[in-house]
Each structure stands twice: as structure tokens, then as C-alpha cells.
Image (cartoon, rainbow, N blue to C red; front, side, top):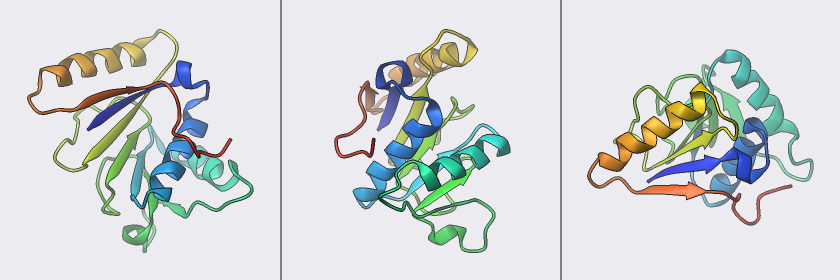
Length: 147
């Protein structure tokens, strides 16, 4: 499944939306790989995951740590499935979509016009032509996600 999450409709910036989605998938027993655009965004995501819900703890780490393969939520800059994740959450449209590596791919789609939104549209059109690809649109975060 490839899920496109519309950040404009969700009403959150990318990092908080990623935190909510990671928490939801973790609560469902799934491992998550968050693929950041760059090391700076990976660091911001790490901070957001520590602070977005003061009432709970979401176990996570940045890729490159010795125990990265054990982490339920791993933040990386490459879509390598280092923690055996079932869900890959992309902060930006990937150059190549690893359909065979992850059962569930999530792509955060920006709410404003620009090159990244156009890249998401092109990726959607491409995937729509691929046989057997289950495409979904999300305009709301899952119930039970922290506020």
C-alpha cells in the first residue's frame, strides 16, 4: 500500500504529522522507518519525537546507532530497512519507490504549490499505472493519535 497524506488537509507541519503517524503505527505493533530529506531534518524529527506527546514515550533513534536494528521507530536519510520496518514514512517524494521493501509506504504531501507537490503528483500518476499498487489518500490523522 502507498498512502499519500495531504498535510494541508491534516493541518500539521511535516514533522508533527510524522510523529503522529509513527506513534499510530507503533501503537498497532508496526516498526516504522522515517526517511528524512537530510540530516538536519532527521535531527528535528528526533526532537519532535521526544516532545510531541508529554504523556507518552515513543521509542526511536537516529540511524547509525549500534542498536538501530532493534529500534521500533528509526529516523534515517536513506530508505534502507535497517530496523525491519513494516512502514516507511517519507518526508519528501523518493527518487525510487521501494515497493518490494516495505508493505506500507507513507508519503507526506505538502499543502502548498511548489516543486515538491508537483513531484508527489508525478509519483502518484506513475504509481497509478503500476499493476497491483494499492494507492490511498489520507486527509485526517488516525484516531487515537496524540494531539
